[in-house]
Amino acid sequence: MEKELPDYQLEQLKKIKKTSKTNRRGFFNKITLGLGTALASGFYLKFEANWLEVTRKKIEIPTLKNKSPIKILHLSDLHFSDSDSLENIDSALREGFALSPDACVITGDFITDQISDQDILTLGKCLKKYSLKVPTFATLGNHDGGSWAGENGGLPNTKKVEQMLSHARIKLLHNKRESIYLKGQALSITGVGDLWSQTCIPDKCLPKKSFRSSTGPSIVLCHNPDAKELLANYKWDLMLSGHTHGGQFKIPFLNWTPFAPVKDHSMVEGLHKWNNRQIHITRGVGNLWGIRFNCRPEVSLLELSPA
Image (tube, rainbow, N blue to C red; front, side):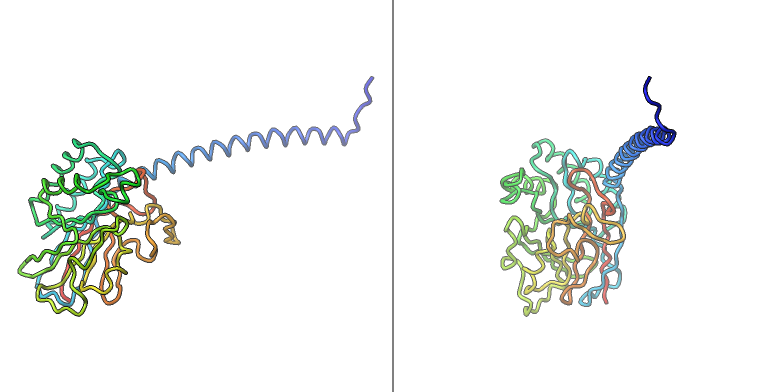
């Protein structure tokens, strides 16, 4: 006959068995909670990527003389791909043009990676529906072809995107300058090449700061806001950029954007003053990987008026 265990040892065994059952139950509960949280988070990241925000911003430019505001629709980073559907792009354009802009600018990254000729033709047809309404200008981004894109799974040159924009009746300003009149006000609109693609050449299209111009305020279209340092010694009043996606993943409360593809994280979205000039960075329409967090896609209506 086995020796009976003392009472205190029996009590210890009971406690161990009870604790073991509780730990197993707690472990499975944590797994269930973790999986549920991950699924919910994944759903929200996808949801926010398609949750468009239309913003209106007033920008004062001292050299403007028009009485009523000039309305510029600013879009960027359409990123047409499997992650960013043509339906979303068309919806963003429709909502933006519903605000009756006087002109429209698109600051690069029309596509992501390599897309078929049919897809790029379809994108051009979508853009043309809107570009015929008002003067529309564009510049290219790092995903639209060239040295950077070619090394990162994209098009080796910009020819396809250039042809698409031409068919869409969008004026591509690639290191070029255009003078226009909107509501009787003279404006100079310049587009520079992409910084990462090493095609940003301001000497080709921008006068030096000391130059006295009679063509009115100068607006620069520049995909990557980090290029501001390269443009510092040239004459312009307002720079319009994209590229950042608002950070794509912004830590709440801290406004920390660890994944923003720029060196200067103080300028990731919105309107900023810089060296007695202004820079507007839109969060863009599309995204990469089909997700966003705390930085919804954006279409911006900029209302330019005298100071």
